[in-house]
Image (cartoon, rainbow, N blue to C red; front, side):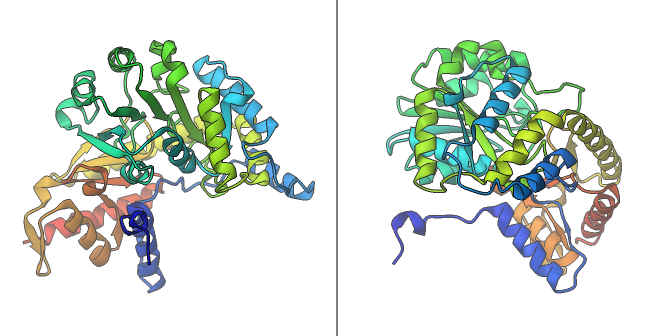
Length: 398
């Protein structure tokens, strides 16, 4: 009964693990979830109060499919402040979450013969999104040798006559690594040689930085001439702790942005009017909150790194931004726990969840087996307890 597309559809691994963790929790188990990319602090007061105000004022009707004028104006002002880029109001579209902005961008850009270059480790949904657009994901594996980043040489080697889109993310999900201006400049030089290639830049974590910078380096800072063939993706979920509000946006050439808006009008329709009102307030009033968040995340990161010193089997890579730890667990594999053989990182994460009730995401889902990703957007006490359970698992493996 299902279409061929539906038959090949995969469940989001992170959302599946979240559901599994909640199922175990409902059974009375003390589950610690380090899976989903979601802050554990509430939405900032300015945004929350604005949402309440929108309801009280009756701002609860449909808006334009591409978003309210007020929010689109706030987005253009923010991008001007962050990256010194000027966008017209018809070059920005608001969507029901940044995830849908990426999905819609791929839908309007890709044809069946096209290839989309994705650098691994990648966000778990990228390849499936490309497949649902009818295109082919071309996965470029990036190892510790290149600090898990795609280099200009790797990019150049993987470009073919069918390459249509380069899907890029910095700070990276899952590693938290940030591309330097020099690295971005080298990548930009390759892209300049291939003017047919479009860039979709996932900037969701670009405000969560640990070096004191207000924003991560961007390819536009070193190559503003790429602006006419680049779509920027961002939203309220990460920096503004608005995951449940489901507000994202895309900026880019008017023709592409118009197509994304039209696609949304025929699928999700307009984003929530209440969420848009709250997002506009967040963009205007929450800079101090973001700075406080970065300080908190940095403290949590240092606490986690200190706790992990007690597990020599793990190699931890210190991130530059976002709120994830990328962990090499290969030295912990190849043994058994309570009769169950643990060969892969997927095995390890499964046992860790089902036996010790700690939920993490295995590296297989990001294109790099032998690793796992965990979020440190959780209280230091709960994270310390999770790490102790990992230590217990390893100590009892035979």
